[in-house]
Amino acid sequence: MDVVHWSLEGRDAKGQLWIIILDTYPFIIGRGDNSNLLLAKPGVSRQHALIETIKSELFISDLNSTNGTLLNDRVLKEKKRFLEGDKISICEYSFKLSRVKDDIGSEKTIITSSSNSADEFVQKYNLTARESELLSYLIKGISTKEIADSMFISAGTAKNHVLNLLKKTGTHSRLELITLYKELI
Image 1: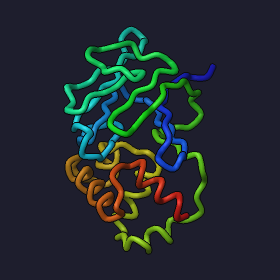
Image 2 (image 1 turned 90 degrees about the vertical axis):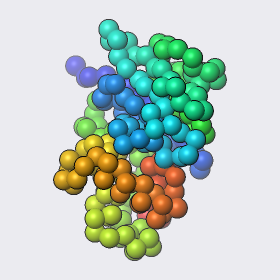
Image 3 (image 1 turned 90 degrees about the horizontal axis):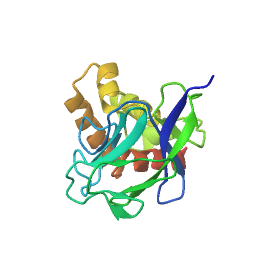
Image 4 (image 1 turned 135 degrees about the vertical axis):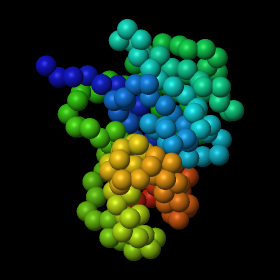
């Protein structure tokens, strides 16, 4: 029997599909170093929204963010059930909740196009070996905490490295970085 997981599906500004697997609960969306989905835009709060399970059902709540969270185009004022097909919007990001079968291993972000080599990207942005290693984790959708563990650094240092890589590439979120990467490969 296949295990069923939930995912957030969204599209970037260029229309590329992004699928983020919700495999850890509580699942925090924000720009903070403890976020499971890092959205590094100024309008996103450090801890913006929370997805959690209660008795096998999903719930979403806004974490008193500065700019709010929309659930199905309505301001989320209290914890609400999060149902398949529901849409959440955080600043300019929008995601739809979907069910997926567990055939993707432990990756959290699935990129729907394939890539050949990262060499062009690394050369274009003059990335160091360490930044290239970080990029490989980001492309796989690895969380900041897991990156920290893999690179033997603190979560705060990992977050700083991610933010520096975003700045170096002129992007504002992991999604934008991965889109840029895919465009150049």
